[in-house]
Image (cartoon, rainbow, N blue to C red; front, side, top):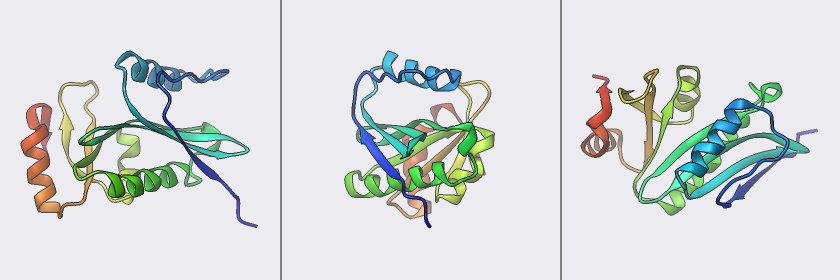
Length: 156
């Protein structure tokens, strides 16, 4: 029998999660609230919350945090969340969907259709920048570079 799951879409500012002891989750929420981010939190739930993605939405969309609970990694939780974000992005936005990617997550984003164009130099450790858009790859790369290259080491 296939596991039934739901992806909830929450638009609550500020965000509060009770009874969560995970330090990374607390840092993501603190940054979201401190910078008064606006967007949608995509929550993967099957009996319990297994993971979430925080997406800031404007003319471009930015994935501001992705988390999968330790016991649920490797089960497709993050991939399903990213696919749901991409579906909504394609329906609602004509710009870019981009994300700062840690080394551990590069393969996940490549597998879900993101292109990686470089590394950010303004954060330590350097993180890759992944982009997903409605443009063909050459147009996407040029438009993204024109808009966001001030803090990038560009992949050639």
